[in-house]
Image (cartoon, rainbow, N blue to C red; front, side):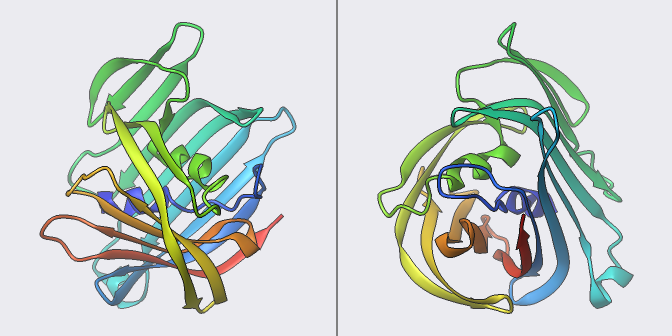
Length: 231
């Protein structure tokens, strides 16, 4: 289920050069079987703080056996094309394993306080550092370009990790929400434990219409767009 949370981090709806409020719904598949639904929302408050949230749970017959609910929330400011994270929280309700994570950013002191699986640590902040959930909001702003190629500094599981994303081609993708011309974006930094592919549709505000993640010795995880609304 942690892998699902990673996928949930890949669901923004963005204008070509700015952030746009949105809501969207995706089906979640493990292999070729639909097992759940994800609801995403990006909204802006009157004091210019952005709130990015997701909630996912099992649906259909799977819900009779799996009661887990996953949620994520990032609060941040966005100024001149730069993300300034404020806080991040991941919760996995119903799991016997403690995989919860929270991050409190202190840009004045240049430190992020992280609590991961109950263990606390302080991480030195560098310019441009973001959490995993904000990664895709940052990437999607420019990912509609075929020459998109960028490395991000991401706080993930209590550590700062490089995430190298690159546009690798164009494809037509058909979902229940429609047919879309997309730019395919992949993680290319050689992490065999988390292979990642996204199909981004520039015509609908850079919304990903399909996302796939492969982990070693596990079935492919997939998110497919079902409905969306761009504010």
